[in-house]
Length: 240
Ligand SMILES: NC(=O)c1ccc[n+]([C@@H]2O[C@H](COP(=O)([O-])OP(=O)(O)OC[C@H]3O[C@@H](n4cnc5c(N)ncnc54)[C@H](OP(=O)(O)O)[C@@H]3O)[C@@H](O)[C@H]2O)c1
Image (cartoon, rainbow, N blue to C red; front, side, top):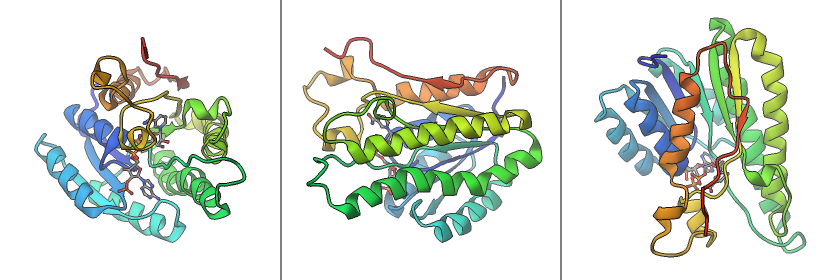
């Protein structure tokens, strides 16, 4: 299925999984609007996307603040002309024991990963319903399938993303909108490097790379419209 000239919004598209996804979609001829809080990073990625021959633009805002989301999603959609695809990728990880983690850090994790995803989706969804077509990818995690020690806030946020995502999928399937829940395991990005989850000089040989994640999204988009990837867990073949 040709994806050329479709319009996509990718939150957290300046770096990491979001950037790899933006590049993969641009290579398919999709115009892309990326978001994040760091303007320098967004500017640089937007230039890379434009060099691939598509219309690329960015918006600087914090997904956890509803008023900012409202204004900026509207601006992005105006700049793109419309929207067909949303990749809800922006997120933060917080690691720490249940008692030692500050209440504010717990709240920030939920506010960003859950409320941020909800706000963005709420602002994009009416456009997809109006055109009776669309694709929404919600990036959860293996941490949304199983709890683990020292990761309670992140895990709770990703369990919530899965619940939100599956509920929304059942609600808008009838509108020809595919809602896809992704639960990747460890992929090499700033997030996993900062958390010390990636080690070893030969890591690229065996650790999942952002391009692998992006390939999954491209492939899901190419399915005939009658078919929907409901959820997908991306694992590495041999993590060592
Ligand atoms: N890497 C993995 O192994 C892995 C595995 C499973 C799930 N995930 C999920 O995949 C997503 C992307 O992760 P990543 O590994 O690419 O992380 P990353 O390298 O840390 O990138 C996170 C992205 O989210 C954006 N972001 C964070 N907080 C934001 C906020 N409040 N408002 C707007 N943008 C915000 C960042 O942009 P700015 O800094 O410019 O704001 C950045 O682009 C996250 O939802 C993460 O939980 C990652």
